[in-house]
Amino acid sequence: MAAPNVKALMEVIYEAFEEKKDSKETVSQGNILAAKLIPNDDASTLLAVAQGLCNEKKWKIVTDNTGAIAWRVRSQEEATKYNSLKPEDEIVYSFIDESGRDGIWIKTIRSRSQLHDSLVNAAIKHLVSKKYIQEMKSVEASTRKMYIRSGLVQSDKTKGGPWFTDGDLDEVFIDGVRQALYDYILNTSLYLTAAAQKQIDRIEKRAKEPKKKSKISTHQVQALRDRGLGTTALTMEEEMQRRMKEQQDELAKAEYKYDGYITMPAGYTEYKTLDELTEFVLGAGLAQGLVLTAKDLKQLLDVMCFDGDIEIMKIKNDLEGYKATRQSVRPHTKGPYNRLTEAPCGRCPVFDLCEEGGPVGPSNCKYFQDWLEL
View 1 (tube, rainbow, N blue to C red):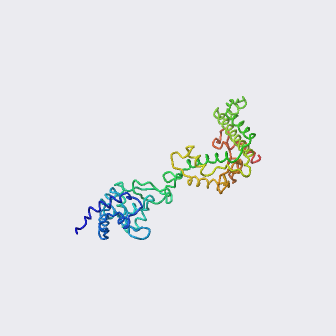
View 2: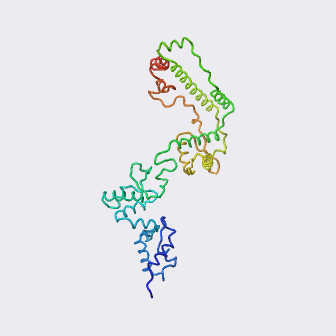
């Protein structure tokens, strides 16, 4: 009997399992025999073919989840890369390749390869220059120098999911989605009375009305001149009054909301569920082109629950919805207390306008005089 053409069989079998290339799937001896491509199911021929494919770097020998010998298929492009590398470069590249989308720490490469640091560093430099690998940042280990095979997309656990950008927490994006979620949950879980809404509308309407230009008396003009100040001081005084008025209006609206919001009656079943909130965020375009899943939003909702902004409500059949808490609409009139906030400066609405010689300053601050009881 003529000896089988191993080279030809290598081509046939490689093509037969090429669909598994560059994946975590493996090819077992049983898979090869089941394909009926080995003459007489000869084991020695099978091993010769597999060894030949390994020598050409098209296959890599591994063990499957049962501990049996198996093979992982590489693409022709990857095989060409491996064949172009020196032994030490190939070793380093293989560790990075096997790490997949999670990447690998350079210290781990040094430990596993048992290569001298200089050889590992040289290999890394060469592989980066050939664009075979690239450096990556992982939110799990932001200070570690990590590498990933070029062309691969980092896994979500290393990127931190949609809440991270280039390895850093995207606070602006998170705050935007969080505020939109809170407003939506608030408006669908608490009821604002008509009387409270009327008062809020009145305040907002008044804020939009054109402001009358304030008049300055002759006495005020002379006082400014005596202090060596010009019209800039008057402008700053007006700005201070405007900011204080805005702060008062915001506080008034917050108080009307707190008094006007009432909870839904017992048995209410229209609290928004996780799926409905996910649909709202995606429908409103808040994802900004990112893939936001219900699991991602659940992380944010859990934080909001922990902060006391919302709470989970049982609806029916173990279904859960979300409700805004009463404390989340409470006016923040006092806030955290410390020695700084006790002093007028700690909560002054025009703190950034305060300077000696200006319309408001340490020497002429009426709040200080009241506080010190002078």
